[in-house]
Image (cartoon, rainbow, N blue to C red; front, side, top):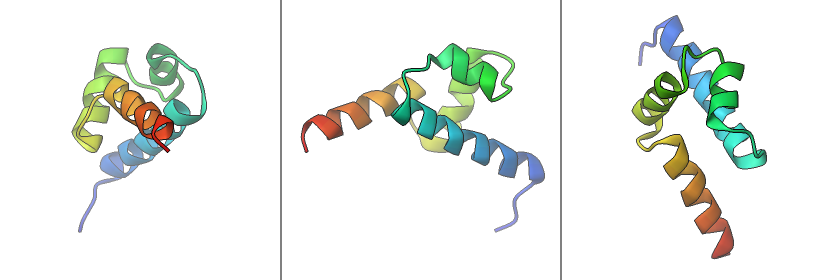
Length: 69
């Protein structure tokens, strides 16, 4: 599968975002700025494009799964 450099960078940013969402209590605004997105809505839409769910849904799903273990 061919991937552009921009796609590669965005995928890496999303991987970092996933870790931050799981391992910290950082806000979406903080994560968005930390990763260099132009705004939190841009970060959220990019996250959803690559992960299939919003960052908020991702965090909630992880918390819910951790509570059932």
